[in-house]
Length: 235
Image (cartoon, rainbow, N blue to C red; front, top):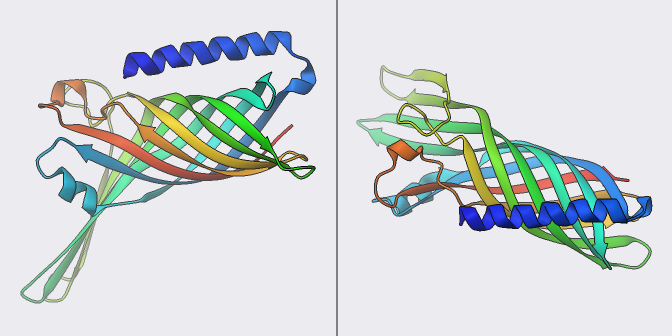
């Protein structure tokens, strides 16, 4: 799968480069967009994967993307970009015993730089603008992150809050928390007005394993799932 994504990226980059050198200025657009992410991890092939996934909650983050549109055909263009993506997950569990309730929250926040390359098909809607349907691969680089733990106790004599946080480490060895690189695919739907304003949604499907290589056991896998909403402008 990684080889397939890399091959697709090379082909799309080559196509975009060709389009840039052969079309007029009116066939190229540049823009920026930003918005909100609803992110979580997805576990597979682990003992207890289903329970793990059921207890996951969305981690609210953000996205900022600079992009370019290069026309390669009638209502069809290639859209490479550079994006700052705030991903992660949130786990919350509540237990009550002997009149004491403990609510534990573990929030993982990852900051990644992504390079998406999408193929975009445009469906004009008269003079107002056009619907844009997009799909393509991305490669991401995890650059920073934090784990935040908090336990809130109510009832009894131990009421209070205990919290701490630690920085995440990225790499392939057992002392790292997550892999430093990621591959995945994007699916998007947007509407762009003829004046340049756009609003859209994007789903990022992580395909590579976030567990560091030296820490993997069997076929167990942890991947990203990100639903993003954004507004922007292109010219």
